[in-house]
Length: 146
Image (cartoon, rainbow, N blue to C red; front, side, top):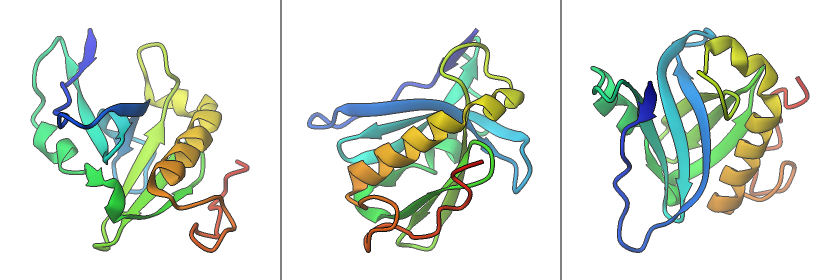
């Protein structure tokens, strides 16, 4: 039984979009931690997966990847269903989208490219980064057509 850790939202914050996925181990396609990426009206939140409701050892590490929308400077798609989120502090977070239903094994990411593209679009929209190719957005697509 997979569940996600509860999100801590501010009183004036609401959820806009969610996408299941995982944070990959380095540049590999292996899963470091299963997460639910949640876009709110103020932040990008990463809620770690919990198996049978039990906390995982990396839960605080996953939560630390969360970022304010104001601090996001770039979001770009990468090979497969991976996307990269960059902050104004020079940090970057890789996220790999998986299908919205099912257990969520790593190989589901092969079919999740449309979900990656929608996630990139939603993050850019929430952060006010504009569309790909605009001055505010990054011009390098990073392989969105894969």
